[in-house]
Amino acid sequence: MFHSKKFLWLITLSIMLGFACILAAHASGDTSKPRVMDGGLWRYGLKRNHNTGTILAKISVDFANLRVVNAYKQLNQQYASSVISARQARDVDVTLTFASPLSWEDVEALREETSLSVQLYTFVALNQNGEKGSLTSVERLDSPVNINKATEIITSQGYTLQGIMVVHGTVPNTPEGLGKLVADSRVYLADVMANRVREDLLERGGLSDTQDLHVHTPSPFWDMDWD
Image 1 (cartoon, one colour):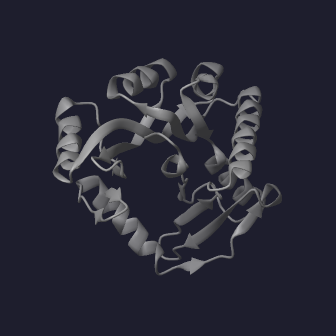
Image 2 (cartoon, rainbow, N blue to C red):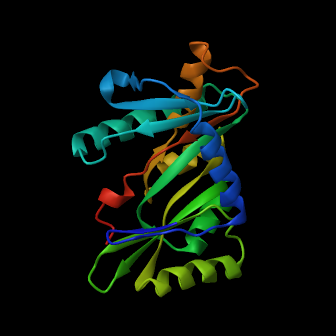
């Protein structure tokens, strides 16, 4: 979907239809009271679908508060270090927000270097008045056709593509994988709190190993000076 300050433009993609069905199913479930984490630095809420057993979690962070942002970044760095030190052979969920928009070639190189499996890309754009816009795609963008399509959509709305600002996916829990992403100077925030949500639910008995958990992790990119 394309977002700007003036309008919301929805793109219907085949893979998005499946996600929309998941969200619609969750709408009929129970919503829990948000759970406050790390002294109120962040929190998450849950919506359960009793028919499918699927759980949707949504993380909330006050990204408009710079003090909170800096503390949240440090928290993620500490957690990532502890996860890597544990040496558990598994992939971890990660949402990367870049310090400035990266080209597709740079993102592809980073993906190859770290074995990052990307599931979602957020492109950012500017119009002639300097207003920000974004386009999120959950398709695989490993062919020029898809990149051209994203550029076409953005251009049709009067915006110019700046690059990729956010990616979401999974990465191996290794120094060469997650560790390299956290240490990359181009990465403003490597958010791994989705894994904390899963751990917290498992510890409190709110999630079983067989249940599906979908965690929505926000990004501070809209509040950043990438323009």
